[in-house]
Image (cartoon, rainbow, N blue to C red; front, side, top):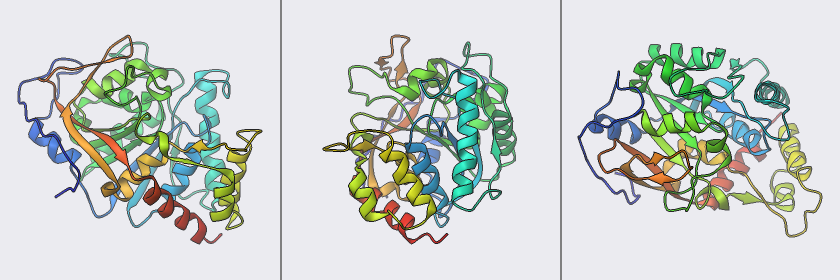
Length: 323
C-alpha cells in the first residue's frame, strides 16, 4: 500500500481524443501507474543540452543501478538560445549525452539514439527518428512494463505512440512537464515546446505519471556552495556538474538553481518520497490551460516531493562514485 494520499475515481466510460485504435481500461491503467518493480527497466528521453539539470538526472540514473536498468538513452529536441533550431538542439543534446557518459567513464555502456529534428506538425503525423523507432521496437518486445522517463518535450514519445498505439500496453511514461493542475496556466518549457505532443500524452490513454514544475519540483533547488561542500572534488563527473551550475549565473550571492529533472529519476529510485493524486486526465487546451472532464481515463499526478530525501540520496551516490 502506498502511504500517499490518493484520490481514486474509477470511471469506466470510454474517453474521446487521440487514437481510439488501442485503449486500456481504467483498471489496467491503475495497475500500470501503481507498478513498482524491484528494479525498473527504463528509457531516458532527455534534452540534455537545453540547460544543466538533465546532466544531473542522467548521472543520478546511471548511479542508481540497484533501482533501474537503463536500456537506452534518447536525445530529445529543444529550441531556445542554446540551439539555433529544433534539430540543432537535438544534435547538441545527443553530443552532451556522450559527453556525460565519457566523463563518467561509461562511453559505450548504453545505446544512445538521435531523436526528432522538428516538433509535431499535427497529432496524426509522427516525427520518425531513430529514437522513436527504437522505442516502438523495444516496447513491443518487452515482457514487463518499460518506464519511459521523459525529461523534455515529449516529441519522441508521442511520435512512437502515433506510430504504434499498441505500445500503450507496454510502457509507463513518467514526464516532467506542465504546471500543477490548480495553476492558472499549464505553460511550462517542456509542455510549451511541443503542445501537440503534450496533448497526446494526456489524451492517448498511455499510463502516465505527470510531475509538474510549479508548485511541485520548483523547490528542488541547490546552490554552488552546497554543491561544492557535498560533491566538489569527489570525482570527475561531480566536478563537471558543479562547474556547469557555477557557469549558469555570474552572481551566486543569494542564488540557487532548480534541478527539476532529477524528480523523474527520484520517482524510480523511491516513489515513497512523493505524494500523488489519481484522477481523470486533464484536457490540455490550445490556450495552454487545463480543462476537466470526469469521464476521461485515469492518470497520476505528483503533488509533493521531499526535497531533502532526494538530494541526500543523489549527493551520496555522486560523492561515493569512484572514477
